[in-house]
Image 1 (cartoon, rainbow, N blue to C red):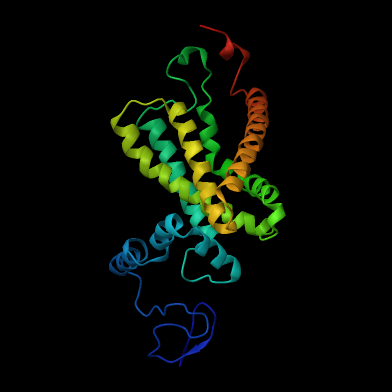
Image 2 (image 1 turned 180 degrees about the vertical axis):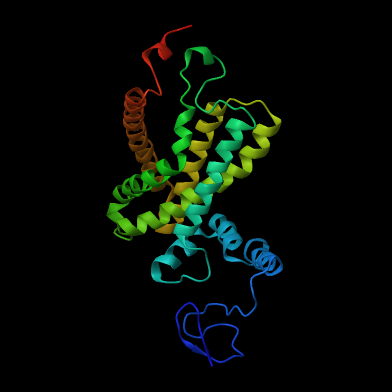
Length: 255
């Protein structure tokens, strides 16, 4: 007899998986070969939970979200891990855009000399993403309060999946797009923001099983709320930038 290294449950020597917690029994010493095999299975296997989650978030997002909420936790990747991977890749994307592609993320190409460079904001992109998640959840919770189907925490789950999905798409689109074409990021960002909201309410339409008219009205309400919050956050960021010396009044003087 041996014991599971994850839960301590007693095991027979011929077990490949723990019957108590489901963990795989690792019998070999750690080598580059078995690490490579494990990674290839976890990341590149077309049947693994990550790729399955990514594919099905387009075709049946309500199954993924409602399944996790109701307790089905094995078939798809959980929202915390899915969101964390997406935010990590987004951070790498913005690093590539700024340092390899030399893209101005906050300046307008038409008149960059009169626009202060706010690209330092993307140094805190991951932190901002985590801080924004409760706000996104609050907005959708308010907009769908009459349906009484999901509580606030469940809206957090739904928004984590949605935000992660649009972040993955952003990485897949931006890397080749900005690598081959000279495009104003701000123009692209506004179009992509609209696309993200359309996808978000496509997901919520399927999740709440509502009609197109109701979906559009709630989406418009979301846009209004998002605009107000975006302006408030912009003011806070600007104040913090002045307080920390990232911005100076001279930056706004026409050159």
